[in-house]
Length: 336
Image (cartoon, rainbow, N blue to C red; front, side, top):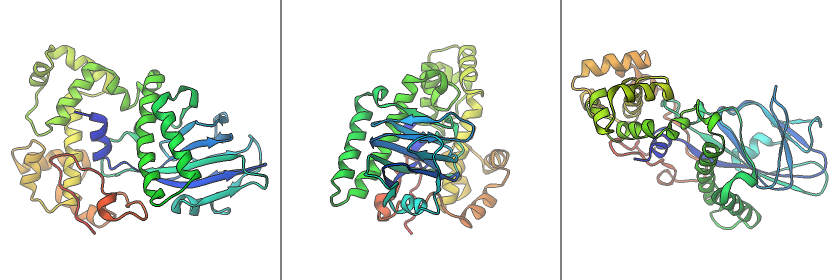
């Protein structure tokens, strides 16, 4: 069971290539806090990344940086240069439609691909929300796979062809996973307090794999420990030390995430949804759901359908191409 792939898929994490920044001379742009995670890959030249209250970081060719919370930030040719607001210089429009954003008056020296990652706010078990404010992976620490993907991005940007937008979006998705892999390997201390950090502990990782593979199974601490050939006390201690919660509590939250998606995106009756996440009665399921979401399942379904149904599809892609892979046991949302 690939736990990270499962959480990314259920969480609706989806990358979209944004502004292609071409900059030269003295330049700077400030970005307001954004709803989605922001990502940059420097394919040539250099830039400086500045966030309020943090020391400026220089970005070199081949560097990639992820701002999981979409925090307010600035990119510039050097710290302290005047900054143009993103709205006033076409930055927001460029991020939305993937166009070229020209900054500075000098000859182009720096090329940066900007991107964003959306995720489904209905799902509480998210990778993005557990990560630090900034993940900066330098080119000389990236490893061959990450370096190769950045080079592919650079070539695709330098020589655009048919379906370049499609290719860029897929590469952006790949870059996210590769960036997380490298960050987990290179910065285990930082990763320890995040959801990703759970995967570094073999006992907890194996336990999570069991729970994710069969979320509807009637798991108890005894049956889970037996599956892992561990004592109950060892499993409980290790799991709580790494996750801050007991296996049963984690499983309940994951079940409620799966149920919330199904309530929003299907017309399945409550008894079918309850059984799919391990509850033998609608009453027990409704009580658990209300505790987790502060709403009864029916109220949640009505409220969710009155608002947007998850992240919007990337521009320019037909519905069948933009739909995230849904794990077994979950219905696909209807096409619009």
